[in-house]
Length: 58
Ligand SMILES: [Zn+2]
Image (cartoon, rainbow, N blue to C red; front, side, top):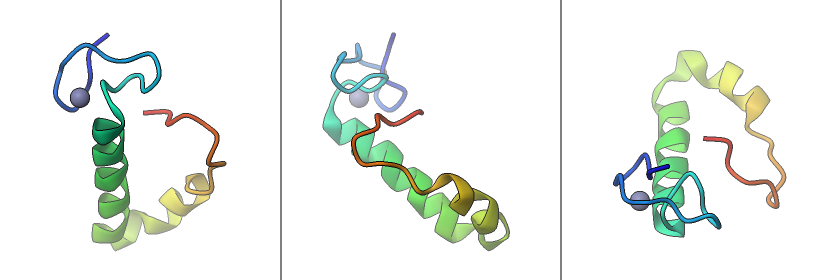
């Protein structure tokens, strides 16, 4: 499995990412997208509340 951000080998601790940095980048993109596209914000908000201890699903 490779990191979807930089395509390096993923780290089991941060999979599917290679590092926390890439996980944060992905999260940042996701959040930014939710803000940039007002029409989709309502749908995204239903999925937004996630427990901090859960691993990112994408
Ligand atoms: Zn990466």
